Every structure is written in C-alpha cells, then in structure tokens.
Length: 123
Image (tube, rainbow, N blue to C red):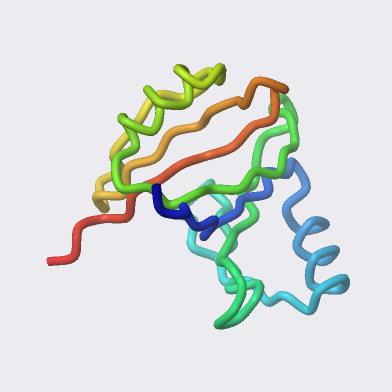
C-alpha cells in the first residue's frame, strides 16, 4: 500500500479574525478570503512549496472550535469503509461539492477527528 499524503488542514473558529491574527503572528501565514456572502473561509498556503495548504472556517458561536487534517485519497467512500473496518467511525458521509471535490469526516478509535478528500477530476 502506498503512503497517503496529508495535503490540507482546516481550523474552525467562532472568532476567525482572532484565529487569523494568531496564525499570522505565530507562523507568518497570510490568508485570502474565499467564502461567499455570510460565509468566512480564509485560505493559506501555510508551508509554501514544501508545506500543506489550509484554511480558517468561520463558525457560529453554537459550533465547537476545531482543528482537523485532511488526507488526500483515491476513493473517499472506500476509505470510509476501510476506516470503519479498522475501528473508526464515519462522522460525515462522503459529499461531493459542485466543484467536484469529494470529502468526508471520520473519527479514529481514540475519538480524534480527521478528514479525507478526493480533488475534482482534471478536465
């Protein structure tokens, strides 16, 4: 089996301005707003050419704050099946965005949250 790369992370925050300032001050990351009306999604290249990309997603005050990494996989649904067979759980079933990106969220046997995704097909 080949190694699966971790290529994305996401930080959910009910105070995205504060989170952005923190990560910019701490690591020198810059962010670009990608969200639509009423939706904050601030992307960063984080580690440049050697690092992974990521974003801060604005949440409402009723949602828990979180940090999650995403591994890029060939087949999200199959990865969900394998996660369950290995003792994990599927928290959010596979969803395909209008862009063609397919993603899901899982919990490992210890309860840690992680994500998997397949990028849109090139075409």
